[in-house]
Length: 498
Ligand SMILES: Cc1cc2nc3c(=O)[nH]c(=O)nc-3n(C[C@H](O)[C@H](O)[C@H](O)COP(=O)(O)OP(=O)(O)OC[C@H]3O[C@@H](n4cnc5c(N)ncnc54)[C@H](O)[C@@H]3O)c2cc1C
Ligand code: FES
Image (spheres, rainbow, N blue to C red):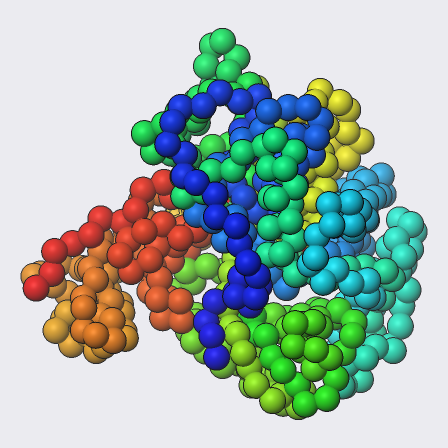
């Protein structure tokens, strides 16, 4: 079995150079995921000179690690949206996401992207009779909002369900090939992409331009789009208005055909399935086992074991070929923040997609492209990046931040560094100090200061991904301290060891 995204392992990625000189552009897009590349392509087509700066490689963020469903069905969402936001805003959200599904299909066709794009029904279901009324309410709300939805119990999973909502003509695709295609179309249209180029600082200037610092180079632009999953540092305060959660994925080959539809359960733990087309009709993707990033009480290895056990009990599995995990951010009212960042004029953001960013992120790109070109966008009121939210959202925000506050309490260590076995890591005692250490299979010891460089929370060892994860706002670091995810802008301090 290979560890890492099935999508990155089964696609060819064009390499782009690192930024080596100062630049001037109309629009700088920071981040080469679905939001950044869709915005970049649409803005370049609008006539702007657009530059994309990507810290790692195009597709290396969450987009390259998704389930690859492009749907306006976001598990259960519409009944709650109507109840909390009112019918008008819920309708805008539905319209934006259904339009995003169609925009993905149009772009793939126009640009000629070979990304296994396939129309299929999407189902959200429950096995619990006590949850049936939630599905009924969801179906009624979705139909009222004009979505292609119906209540059913008929789906092609190998078990009976109590209730399900079916959305017609949704999409699944190969997300890494889709991104590679967007990137190629963008550069063919005259845009530039720089990889291995982390933006370290964003500063609005009095002459109404924005200056970005990336390594030793600076970029001057009229507008900047921050499409980094979560804005870096403290920009817009989004780190305190979102929560990071991880999920786990498997790509399997079944003996016999896999279900052709997409499905997701509302039961705990969540199970999300869709066909994996690469190996033929027996290919299946399974994603599930959500938990907060860096949660102290979660055994990350156990998440893979549970997911695989469920898959083997439910389907006739021949092999599990790939496994991976990734994360996304949720907002207190479960609607992404898209638009102008608070206290900024020329900085635009899109974040908080709650694991539905292929559709929501494409919708965000459509909103941002209109805003960059000074056009009105009808969907903006629902996504407004400066909103505070309803009373329920504010209460959730306060609860989340109280929880984060507790993370600042100092921790213990597990054992002296000498007792760290090959292939294991954790908080250990070295020379009287708490140290974050990992010993690889060859015996090489990596030691870091186990304190997050974002805002100083203690880090937790993630044994499944061999990384240091922060529960406060989702920053993650490699064993050598390099930044993997999240709002942190500095690597961890490396410590000398024997
Ligand atoms: C397991 C899992 C399954 C999912 N499945 C689905 C699904 O089936 N359907 C769906 O709609 N959504 C799904 N999602 C959610 C969806 O994939 C994300 O919401 C979406 O990909 C976010 O796109 P993005 O462009 O905002 O972020 P990303 O794809 O993470 O891109 C951000 C990019 O910014 C770069 N970056 C970060 N900081 C900097 C910096 N300082 N300077 C320069 N570059 C920087 C990163 O390297 C990264 O490449 C899933 C999420 C998870 C975790
Ligand atoms: S991510 Fe904010 S303190 Fe770690």
